[in-house]
Structure formats: C-alpha cells, structure tokens
Length: 203
Image 1 (tube, rainbow, N blue to C red):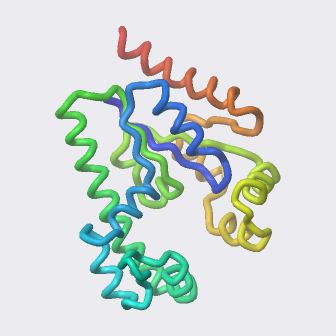
Image 2 (cartoon, rainbow, N blue to C red):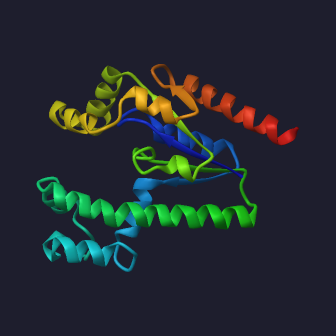
C-alpha cells in the first residue's frame, strides 16, 4: 500500500483531486479537516482538552464546539491558537499513523491518501511515502473562493498570507498537479502519476 499526502494552498482544488482518487482507485481516503472535526466532538480525544483550555462558552446548545466562538477566541490570541493546535495536530497524526498501520496489516487498499493543507508544516513527509502539490495561480484561487465560499478579499488575504509559497511546496512534494485549467486536465495528471505506481506494482 502506497501512502500519499495531497496538499496545496486554499482554493487550489485539493479535495476534487482526492475525491477523484477515491472514486476511481482502491484507496482509503482521509480528509484531515474532517478527522479533526471528529476528534473535537464530544466523547473523542480532543474535546475535553479544548473545552478545559477555552471555557464552556465556546459550546453550542447541543454541546458541540461552536466553531465561530472558538475561532473568535483563538485567532485573537496567538498563544491560545498554538495551544489548540498543540492539542489537535498530534491527535490527528496519532490517528493517521494507527490507520496506516491497520490498513497495511489488513491489506484492503492499494493507496492510502491524506488531504491536508499543513502536511509540510506538520512533517508528514516523515511518515508518508510521498507528498503531492495541487497548484493553482492566485487569481484563479481568489475567484474560486469568492464564488464558491463567499470569502471577502480580506479573509482571502489572511489565509493566503499564512500559507507556504510555491518554492516550499515544490521542495517537499514529489509531484505537482497543475489545476489552472479544467478539472479533467488535473484528473489526467493524477491518473498519469498513479499509472507510474501501478506499473511499478506490476513489474
């Protein structure tokens, strides 16, 4: 089983590439954001630690973390943000390591694919076989974020300003998927990279 991390800046189309792999290959797919959300829910690993750190006023009526209330606290206080990340990121990595171990033992999948924006920052290149970078020009990403998510220029500036540059992504990633054109073109690039892996498996 080959383990691949798919990364890239906001609005580059990472999820579309990962969904394509999930639809067309025998792959275990994990989206890091979804996993983090699960680990932050009541009864899971991060919930009590986050509530103890931030207080019960970040909870909604059903006991779930209120993302807006949580964001208002942590993004106004860099120390709190670091502490919350120090709770969530190690828990996510622990889960991923266990999942890879379990799937290798079970032999159910040809591929294990993790999608996350912070794969390089969190040093996933140390535990995955390779990282792939989904790349897209800034003006296209901005238009996508405004159209599909309703983001303001100010919000986009803030997110993009905190993310890695092209040079760093390319330094750590084995393959680059150019997503400036159509999704079909990006899918074709993905299939070509995976066909290299398939050919190696068959030899």
